[in-house]
Length: 281
Length: 150
Image (cartoon, rainbow over all chains, first blue to last red):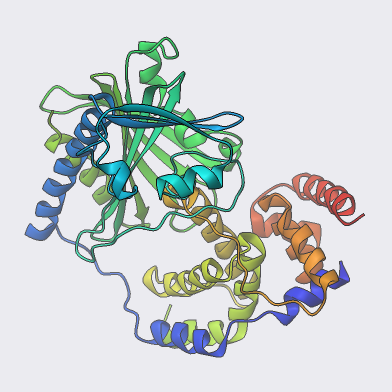
């Protein structure tokens, strides 16, 4: 391992990067106590709206009449049905205007992507199990929200879609995720309830990294029941998450607040409740 | 922590923090972000570090920041291999690739042991895991590396 030692020892921050980071350190400011303000309230409202839109988008755009279904097996089977006017702006123009139904089998991922004009792995539509994939997003400095949808299908039929959005409210990171299901033999209705509980956050060996986790039930004024989960990851000064999970209308939802500092835990919890209280269908 | 003190620590340990992050994440740009984040947090959270324990503390924070990044939602969907690193020889690249192909938790232990020269007890302390876990990771990492480099 002497060789590794030499290789890594030869690598250093570029001088330009060093200067840049140093400047940021010198001009940074300590965290100030935060107060709830109108801007934040407006953002919470937007968050609720977005959350609702996320689900609506997924339900309407996937399980309605038109769709593109991409199923990976030994080949890549792509099924088009009444694609015209669907919200799939990333695909090729001729595909976006396709009106009708067809099935095309592509022998390779490259071939499929070339035909579709769409990077399937990058966009989380499929995974090929390699660690190298990328998703680039459009950002808005004021309201940093991103959305995309992952489709899952069997036998040419879509049965599950995940839709994600991620944005910031003040210093907190807010992630919302909706898993929408359609009627299909592959999925039991009761399984919807479990999508976002435990398994989602703590899949694999992550439990080893937990310092503690607690959960409580919460019922919003609208009657929406949610499970509030506090997650304390091990050994970091900024390592607490608050999550709310709930399910309704064959959809499982997760709202996560992270980026919580030591003295802002109560505020993060309040923010989560604010979002839940503003959630409507 | 005062900004000047954080800047001094950055001058002293910035490269070490960067190298650990690079070793963990395998990507220069993510490593730079983590490096910057670690030092900014010292100021934001008004962190006090005991004398003589600065480096170990910073490496602990770095490991945690890297973990946070890897487990963050977007990172699960966003990833890229770093092709910006230049190696002196094919052999060096081979060694680097072999280390980068290790599971991240093994990589971290390998870096702290072989590059930073920490003992297994110290690594356990930095990573907040048991010594036996360090030993297990070391042993598995060695096996994987020898298999990869054979």
